[in-house]
Length: 452
Image (cartoon, rainbow, N blue to C red; front, side):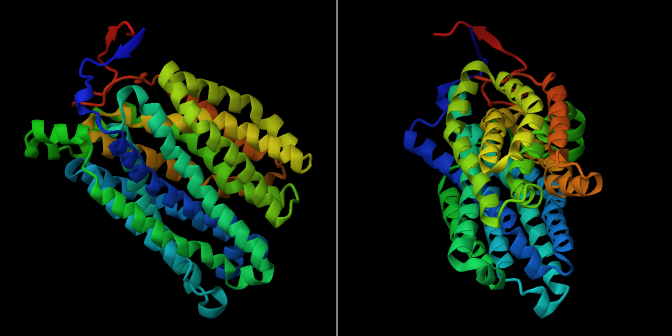
């Protein structure tokens, strides 16, 4: 048996495979640009903290991690601004603006003078630029996931959405490889002096390519249908109060899922190089290389996991991931202590257990809201939860380890986040195969028909 929404129709799905590929590429490139910035920041943290912050190495590292977290505190404001704008003006216009803001801010980070030259203006400028990045990112992921989900065929939304997350890891890996490559080629002295800036300069061309792709596409078929069928004044008047009162349940459930998603995400991707260097005693280059190996393994399995979610349902793959991570967190962190081979295996196992979540979110999260509030609902819930629990994860874990002396604190933190995600998942409606059309929440009214 399969579930088919009564409004499901191929008429609104893109007929041309090339159009679908361009829509996925336009969505994915912004995500890649966002995570390219996270990659170069996380993997260049040692050099950035030494160049732009005062104090000892430990103090400068903590300042740099706090600055990383600051951008996430601004993301809810970005969601509140860009989300309703995307539901009112369309997805493509907002996404074209956010990718330009994000890439320009990343470029300028690479041009900030050192603390030795301009004193406290250096960290102050970095904080301002990180806040601009956070503000633009507040509209980026929710919009990109909505754009992709509304273009994708209903029965292949998981597969198509997995490429958005493939771009996440690709952007992060590209940033990390660039920082690692610069470190190997230039050496420590040159990297501390100027080499760490080079990867930041790549953001500008990435942003321009993304802007071009997004500006050349039509808006999504689902959005255009709503725009044509409903009088404009009616469609634009969806105030924040109405969103919070009428759709509080999906907002709350999405926030709970994002706690699990992003705590695991930022512990594995953003914090792990610092953890491996400081807690496991690995060299600078090896602490960068081990997570990269794990991320490349994750990228291979993302499209497979997305396809699997189309067949068995989003909730089933999430249950597998949450339970697996909860059980494996402590054993894998203990395994990481046993040299480089143990670290590679431990990270890879956790990464592969995380893949089912990552592969399905771009199909699952937008489907939790109806078309007229999809961008806003997704952007607001996702970014509020991410700002509190996601971007702060590296700083919180560093603080917990420093104050407890227990290197397993990241594992406990991940386990707690997975428990919150599991509680939310119990109440989430399965939307696999459901149409995203119309003004009703997908999956609430299902027409059950036999599979052809």
